[in-house]
Length: 345
Ligand code: IMP
Ligand code: ZN
Image (cartoon, rainbow, N blue to C red; front, side):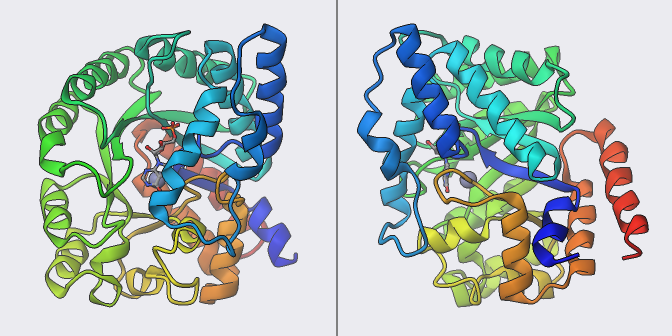
C-alpha cells in the first residue's frame, strides 16, 4: 500500500477541527447556492477564492482570523449550518476518520439565537446516517464579552446535561493576541465542575506567563503548544511543566506552517514533543482554510518528520486515550486495532 492510500485507509481520530474553518470549497459553493435559493442575502460571493490559503501565502496568524467571517456568513441560517455540519462530517468520514470532536463557536445571527446554533449542530450530529462518530466541543472566543462567555457556558452545561455523550467539552480559541486567560477561568472552572472536558489553544504566540497559567489549570488537552519549548519561543520552565503534566497536545502541522507560527514542517515542535514522550494527537485545525485533510496531515508527518507507517498508526491508536467521550473509546480503539491486525503492522 502506498503512503497516500495507507494514510487515507488508516482509521483516524480528529480532535481539533473548527467547523467554520473546515468548510471545503465545494461545501461553500453548495451553501452559497442554498442561500441564494432561500433568498438570503450573502455577501461572500467574491470572497470564497480568498478563504483557502496555500503554504506560499504571505499571511500570518492574525491575517487568518478575518477569513473565518467568510464561512460564518454562509452558516448564519439554521438550515445552512446543519448542511455545513453534515457535509463536513461526511468529508472527514470519506477521508477515513472514524471519530470526530467538531468544535464551533455559538453565534447569534439575524436568523438564530446562540441556543438554536447549538441545537442545530446537536440535531445534525444525532442523525444516524453517518458511520463517523461525532461529538461536539463548544468554543468560547477570546474576543467575546463576559456576558456572552457566561451565556455560552450556561448553554454548554445545559446541553452537556441533556446530551452527555454528544456535547463533551468546551474550549478557548480565537486570536491569541486578544484577551487574557484569567478572564475565562471562572467559566472554564464552572464547565469542568459540571462534567465538561476542557481544551485550550495554548502557546500559539510567545506568552510564557499565560502558558504557565493554562498548564496549572490542568486542561484535559491543549491545542498547538507551539511556543512552549525553548527553541520555539518558550522556555525551559514551561517546557518542563508540559512534560511533567503529560497533557496531550493537539498538533496541527499545516496550520502552524501556513500561519508562519512555525518556519517549516522540518522544524516543527512535533519532534521535541515526540522525543519527550508528550502525548500527541495529529489534527487539522481548519482543513478548509489551510487546504488540507486529516490523512494529508498524517502523510506530511511521515514525509517531513520521518514517522514510519507502523508508528503513524500507533499515534492514531494512542489518540483514543485522549478522546473526551469515555464510552466511545472502546469502539474507536477496536477499529484501529482491526486495521493494525489486518495489515500486520
Ligand atoms: P467556528 O468556531 O466554527 O466559527 O470556527 C472558526 C473560529 O475558530 C474562528 O473564528 C476562531 O475563533 C477559531 N479558530 C480557528 N482556527 C483558529 C486558530 O488557529 N487559533 C485560534 N482560534 C482559531
Ligand atoms: Zn484551532
